[in-house]
Image (cartoon, rainbow, N blue to C red; front, side, top):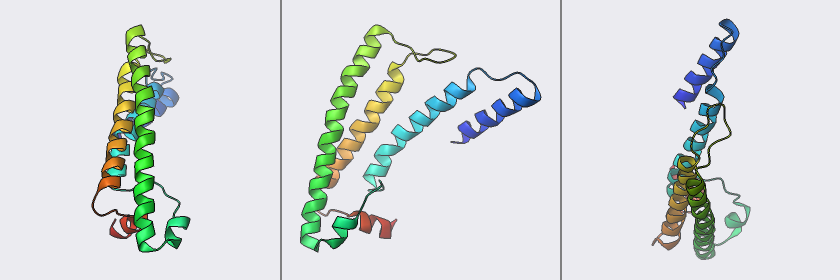
Length: 146
């Protein structure tokens, strides 16, 4: 995030004070944001820090909440793995075709597609771990502990 701030400040300075905008700044910030999101997503999943609507879980008794939470985690894991399969196939296609980003300075797209795959697969593994763990930490418990 610090690099994004530095790049944007440099871009503004170069553009408005020296009339020499940085061609690569906007594209670099976009790719850094993409990288940040998909590198942080597994960490948030591991810590059960994702956004949740807890209206229904708040109404459930403890035993039903445990079953409900496990079910949600396992469904989330399956969804992540299904999406990962699609992403892996697409990443292989992007790599084989040598596709590049639509940017001022084109770069190969496959490393970024692979990074997205990593984030989704890792999140799926953490959802699976949360769903199969001995004690399921609900979103409410995670908020209290965090």
